[in-house]
Image (cartoon, rainbow, N blue to C red; front, side):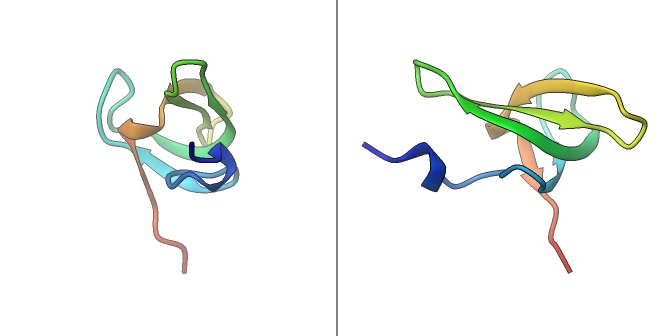
Length: 66
């Protein structure tokens, strides 16, 4: 079994863009990453204007830092 803390994907503090799902086209900073009982990883994204929304981690792409 994989440790969720070591799972690939967006981490708290990463800047990401939503590429699929209801919030496609939005971007922001990952605030809260959780793994559900069924194994799906959900994240809360805070946009620049302060609005937050939840989405599945598989629907986002992490922006390159640098």
